[in-house]
Amino acid sequence: MMNQSLIIWVLVCLSAMAPWLIAGNVVTCSNIVPMRHRNDVISINDFGGVGDGHTLNTQAFREAIYRIKHLRRRGGTLLYIPPGVYLTESFSLTSHMTLYLARGAVIRATQNARTWPLIAPLASYGRGREQPGWRYKSLIHGDGLRDVIITGENGTIDGQGDMWWNMWRQKTLEYTRPNLIELMNSKNIIISNVKFVNSPFWNIHPVYCSNVVIRYVTILAPNDSPNTDGIDPDSSSNVCIEDSYISTGDDLVAVKSGWDEYGNAYGRKSSDITIRRISGSSPFAGIAIGSEVSGGVENILAEHIGLFNMGIGIHIKTNIGRGGFIKNVTVSNVYIENAAKGIRLTGAAGDHPDDKFNPSALTYVSGITFKNIWGTNIKQPGSIEGLKGSPFTGICLSNINLYGVPGSQKSSPWKCSEVSGGSQRVNPSPCTELASTAGYGSCSTSF
Image (tube, rainbow, N blue to C red; front, side, top):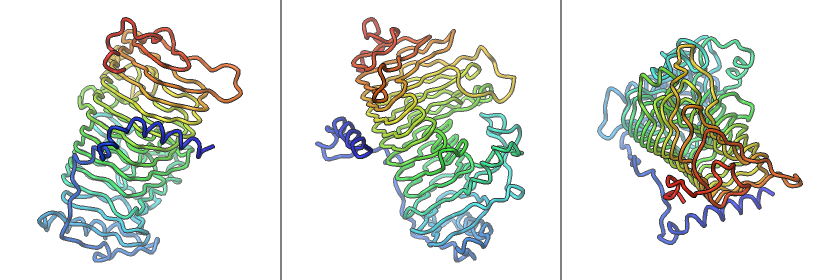
């Protein structure tokens, strides 16, 4: 069955890619940040690194990166991680460096919350995402960086997240769990050809960043691991996410931009983000926007996506008190197999940082296009439920086939409220609010 599904997905993608293939090109956004060659190369072993899986290498990483920062070699420096398992606590990168993991190299996080460093909450969140106050620092961190590359020969960065997941389940967390990688206020970033496994919390979190390429990565975590989002661009612009496989316990890719009144005050949007040729599985969403969208989200393209065994295929979500906006979003050429729901847009998702949010702050949602989407074994095709006082407008559906579970006598219907837009060639037929393109000029350019 999976082989047949993959064939269908490939055919759907190839038909849409035909103009590119005829021209002999594969469309990519990765050229926004060129890969740099570093003439200066050092090894973690030069600084006492030992890849035996037991020796603590935190000091070796910190000394090697200190050397890169202060010697400032022309063109930057490559830090080579040879094959082996390098146990370490959190460490911070510096500008003009490449962290290069050889085949068989593993950077593995320690499992000691008592010695794990803390960091201030993000200004656009006002507190830790899980707990008030400070938060645990990411395993690999960076702030205010330029020209940073994390790459290699598909080496592994292992967060050893099971300890953190159990603390979450047992409600013994003192602070918000650490991300695997978080880069803040940085630009010209490449993350490629690396495997990320068992993150304690979100895997890759570029926040307040610009010019970011994430390509050829594999991200894995058990499907019951809490909040292990794959890639979360947050209040960031010019982001390219391509050619990757993600299977985790939460959204595969989730675009964010701050939380309620803190995101409103910080006021930095996520924009100009491309998500292309991503495949994977999750009990949550494949491609998501939100629910933290208080700084605004615009100009998002997601295309050539393959999703298997999903909670929701595509999920655009907000809540009262968020404010901000979601506009000019296109999702196309998607194959979904085995999902509770194909498409969901909702104004009632997510929690609040505190009771200071403004319930009158409603998200403006408009100009959302879904086209060329094919699904099988979809229990419910979709729901689009806007906000009272701020309906979702310009919602455009085209060439969408979301087939139900074989043997079911009748497909579940679409559910809609507080929405306007149009549709054509949608099966099962959408709700009456979106049943026709007649009178909805906003969809004319989308079809």
